[in-house]
Amino acid sequence: MKPLKFFVILCFAIFTIHGFAQDKPLNLNKPERETWFTELGFGMFIHWSMDVQLGMVISHSMVGASDNYLDRYVNLLPKTFNPYQFDASQWAKAAKLAGMKYVVFTTKHHNGFCMFDTKTTDFDIMNTPYGKDITKQVVDAFRAEGLAVGFYYSPDDFYFLYEQGRLISRDRPEALASGNKALNKYVKKQMEELMTNYGKIDIIFLDGREQYAKTELAKVCWKIDPDVVVTRGAMETPEQFTPDQPLPAPWEANYTFGDQWQYRPSNENYKTANDCISKLIDIRAKGGNFLLNFGPDEKGRFPQEQAAGLNELSLWMFINQEAFVDTEPLDIVREDNIWFLKKKGEHTVYAFLVEESWPFGERKIRTINSLMAGNNAKISVLGQNSIVLEYNPDTDPMPTVKNTKVGLEISVMRSHRIYNDRKWPNPLVVKLEDVSYKQSPDK
Image 1 (tube, rainbow, N blue to C red):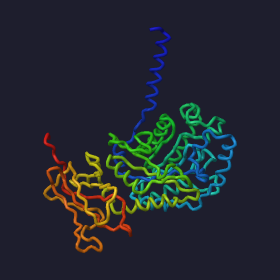
Image 2 (image 1 turned 120 degrees about the vertical axis):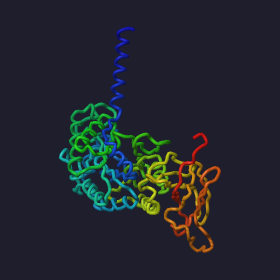
Image 3 (image 1 turned 90 degrees about the vertical axis):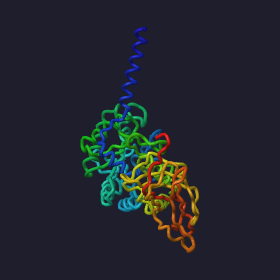
Image 4 (image 1 turned 180 degrees about the vertical axis):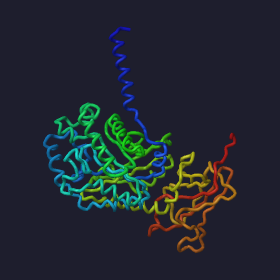
């Protein structure tokens, strides 16, 4: 082999190995803390920055923008940001009512605007007409409701590049912490502030373009508090999709309520509460966490569409919250349109019946092939007593369960009136006690 050709191949191999090492996440989360995190199950994500005033995509409008646009973005928008109707306690109470166990708040997105009180820059919430530390209010409010506190932080910083006189980009080496020593030092200092100025932080979500920066910041977090759980940056965090199968380690799927992460006042397409409930069921049945994002408006309020969807989700959780307390995935995720969770240490299974339509007072019979009933098997529908069907005194709504040659047969009626028109569109949850796997002939 010619020397030059050998040298090129060797350099390519070294680069490839180095790149792989850089891209492979470092995970120093304690196993017991990851278990704790997984048991939380459901969280509220909040994307919010000062550019919400105009309803554009959060941060990214700075990339490719003209000098005039950037000048007005950086120097004018902070001067008009005054979310005077912001009330963190309302957010926290709404999250708790919906069965959420933690919050992840955007302390700084890629634009570099800090939603916390920092000594590193004046490009922050303290230098706006509002002038108060929003991050501290979020932390205090969610802690008061007994919810875990998490911070989103991005090491990408378009304002820092702007101040350096550099082209704002996501891909150039000097735009990344690994190729910009000043930026690397800057973001580590901010991470130290976040980890030390707000008490104990439970969760850190590290966004950004490169794994190097996320790993460097994760090290800062673990050094300050070895108990902190780093999600993105250390574990799988699929964005806007759910894996087809359970993952072998703790993971967290994060979804927007609409199409955009930050509030968009027009041209938005919101998910229904039923969509969100279905995602929650699917993700939890696969052992993951569901982080559902909300985007407050420029005044600090959850838009009506988001608040309404959250309210419906809260109602469903009020009825079915038992299915998410001390439960874990079954070895099987689902059978057709029935998903499963099981009570830890018990022979109790929660079956989520995700039907397209289930009229009030209608009985449906379903067979679960992989389960069998024990001698003391019981069946109930969460939220309903299954004794009375309103205005139908001669109807018996009681559910039944029995073994058949092909599996466990359940017969269930929807007899709990939730809406005035009786058209409650969301899944029923059936509780099955003293049930176990049906052994196949080859076992």
